[in-house]
Length: 174
View 1 (spheres, one colour):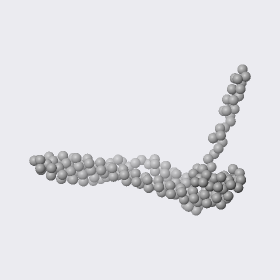
View 2 (spheres, rainbow, N blue to C red):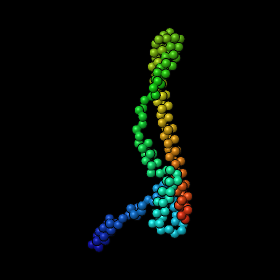
View 3 (tube, rainbow, N blue to C red):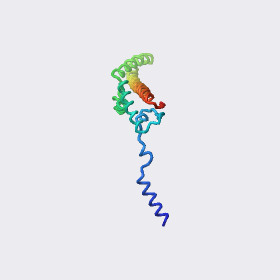
């Protein structure tokens, strides 16, 4: 009987007591990837106020707001890719090259017209495929460039934030 009572009390307490993860909130510094230690014995409330002030100071001095940078990155990631067609004219250029090659080979084999038709069809398919590959590569390069720009902006912001918070007697690690 005692075991049942203790188990019931333990369950009630476990349900009512918040977990450690629920009581800890992510600080401003941690949310931007900066770790701050109160070197002069600042209280958590003072540290929170100092971090908020330095966050605003960094925005004013860099012109970068990490929240906007994050939202822009999410919008770019969620944006639907452009239609997966080959660039205009890539199939026609491939067809023309294929027809010329096919006519040449067909002329040697005895039927230049049939060779040109086969070469044109093959060239059109190959041209569209090359065009799609080039378009996909350009899209990947554009996405990588946007990621690098975003990372550069965040680095500049972290440096500004770190300079401010160090001035308030905190130890900072990036």
